[in-house]
Every structure is written in C-alpha cells, then in structure tokens.
Amino acid sequence: MSQHYRQSRFTKTIIAAIAASCILCSASACTDPLYGDNTAQIQSQTSEGINLNTHYSAELREAREQLSQNGNDFAASILKDGIIADSELAELNNRVVQCLSDLGYSKDSISMGELGEMSIHPPKGAQQEESASWGASMNQDIQACTERNGANAIWQLASAAQLNPNNDGKDARQTIIDCYIKQGIVGASYSIDDYERDSRNGTGPFDETQRADAGFQQKLEACE
Image (cartoon, rainbow, N blue to C red; front, side, top):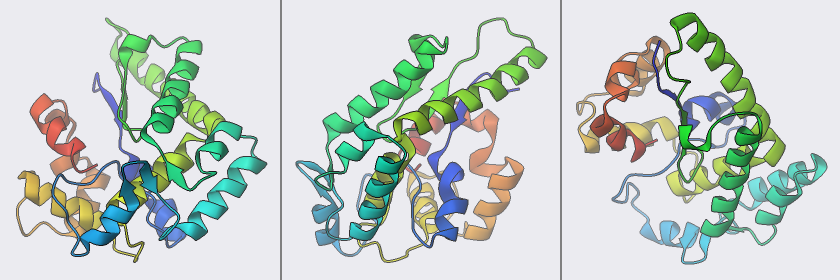
C-alpha cells in the first residue's frame, strides 16, 4: 500500500459537479492561461483574491446559504463579500489542519496546498494491514474536519473560478487533460475516455508509483 496518501480534489468532486451541472473540482490551473478570454480570468482572480460575484453569483448565493444553515459561520463569512482572499484560504486551511491535529495527527505529517490538496504520512513502521486500517480512519477524519469547517464548499468554488472563469460549462476534465499535455504527463492524443479509464484503474497519471515521485507530483500539482 502506498505510504503517501494524497487526495485529488478533482476525483473527490467530479461526480457531484457533473450531477449539479456545475464545475466544482480540481485544485489549480496551469501556469499559462488555458482560456481564450483572459478578461474573465482577470475578473475572477484579482489582487484582493478570487472574485465570485460576476460569473458565480448563483453558486455563491447557494453555498453561502448552505454554510449558514449548517452552522459553518467562518466559511460563510469568507463568502460574505463574494471574494475569497488568500488570507481567508490560509486561515481555513489552518483550521482544518488544527482539527486533524486535535484528532491525533502530527502537523508535521500533514501537507496541504492552497485549495485543499492534502497528503498525510502514516506512522513510521506501520505494517500493510495497519496502514490500510489507518488510511480508512484517516479518510473519515479528513471528511469530518473539512465538513466541520465548511472547507469543501470554499475550495470547490475557488477551484471552479480558477479553472473556468466564465462558468460556461467547460468540462473540467478536459481542462486538466490540457494541462497534463502541457506538462508532458500524457501525449497529445490523450482523451477524456483515457482519463476516465486511468482514474478508475489507477493507471497513467493516477499510477501511485509515478505519483510518489517528487518531480511527477510537482507537475500534477500544477494541474490538479
């Protein structure tokens, strides 16, 4: 079993995103623009943070109402002005990490990216069965901490605005594939069908052996 558990926000949210007909997935866009309309990117990513007011107003309103109903006051306050600031994301992530720390995970074992990409290393010397049991428990704890803090709603909105500034229904899987190709992770003929097959089978870009390589991970993090 892999000694490095990594959660991809795309794989966690794509099913719900498709069902809701809204792109709510992935971590961050490629370094260079993938869209023809750079104005929309400027509108969504400002010096103040990620602006959701123009193209994500409906999703913003729905998320704000849901967070308030669930008692996620801090997460709801982040969306109050419709702009997700870098400092607000940092505080949200700190709260998730603190929650996991309160559950017994060492902060030194937790790595978290800006939009929730996360890895937690298992205890040293754990046998395979122990690691499997630990991994299942860890996934439950991550879910509990992210739900408790309303983090998923914030991460998903921020990711959506970065991936698809116009909110025009562009398939986020194709956006990720475009970035994979740009990073040299897959060939130019790689398709959505290939992506779906590899994500199900743990092959290609989803192969754990490749993902354990630091250089490969760096390329992935530019796309996921």
